[in-house]
Amino acid sequence: MSSRRNARVSVMQALYAFELGGGDADTIINTLIRSECGDDETTFRFAESLFLRTLDRRSDTEETIRRHTRNWELSRIALLDRLILRMAICEIAAFEDIPPKVSINEAIDIAKKYSTAKSGKFVNGILDAVVAEMADAGKLRKSGRGLVGMDQLENKSPTRKTNHQ
Image (cartoon, rainbow, N blue to C red; front, side, top):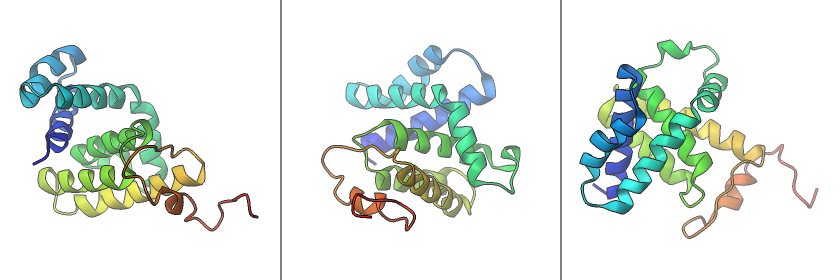
């Protein structure tokens, strides 16, 4: 398992602990995330940043999830699915160097392993819609290696205006 995957799993666990037990984010970082990442400082910094940004963006990500699950109350969505969605949406929006496809695939794999049998498909559907919405709104800002094809994703929607129209 990649160190980034380990980081994402530790962030999911930290979000779960925070959600159920409340408490102090720093304590959760220093106990749960630090112990999962060990001496790998790069992985720890990524996990810490993802955890804190996910907490900071909670209301925004919850609203995004609500928009894409119109017929569902958030409380009816499995808690782990909601946490995985929050984390992935935050990663897609806030980490410019990570391609959306990577964030989506990681979230799907984590959901399949740690949540319900149908969670992978559910998470995939929601995140695909979120990425399309962000691309249509011009809010999908990605840069760096491995992001070839982003222009195709951003121009996927037939309603999207380009300079040539």
